[in-house]
Length: 286
Image 1 (cartoon, rainbow, N blue to C red):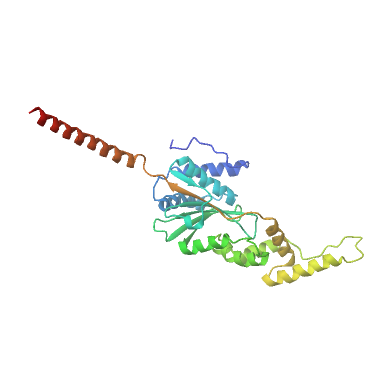
Image 2: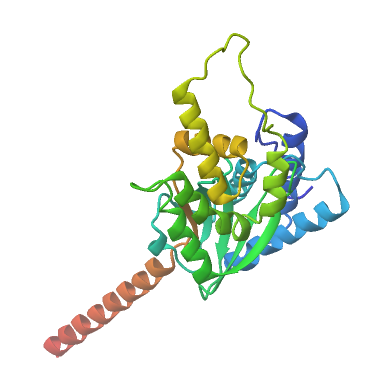
């Protein structure tokens, strides 16, 4: 039995999802730890991806927040990392593993997991979307990744409208989150009907409601959405309080390295001191 095979972690209340996530955790323990975080996380992903390719049920229905929990458990239980919460974008370092809570224009929140290479030139991004997309990887130039994070940090800043954030988020949702935007919008718009339902006893048109309806129609035309879907996204945006939050996992330095060197220097100094004292004493006795 390999290390971790006897562990059962409570990831969620859905037994089938919890089972497949525990299976993934046990697979991750087969990868020898590597202080190069970029290599280490990609090797873990490669094992997951091979299993995904051959098993249609592996990591099925694992939402983005759960994939975040999976990586978090792998890192924390390894006891190899220091955890730095709520770091700023400019504080990201080479070899950092990043667990990031992100805003989304299509949902109340999204989670991504990323690892920066040792040269800080490239980043691997891991995420999932439950039933629509199992765990997948996106490789990205670090500067492009950083620019997307800077944009995400502007989400819902003072003075920004829903349309401002929508236009900003579309390339991010496509490139950073890996969503096929046209297909995703078409699929979601199909769930909403364009028909206007009127109440049975509504003999007069509400002037305020009519103005609101016209506003929604005009705004939806600006960004090419159906009025009903636009209304849904605008409402989600209005109540969404989620902001960009970055947690960095950094490899702990080797234990006792510096302390040992200091200890050796201290012993050497003591020996030299004794030697000098003895020499002086013998000279005096002669």
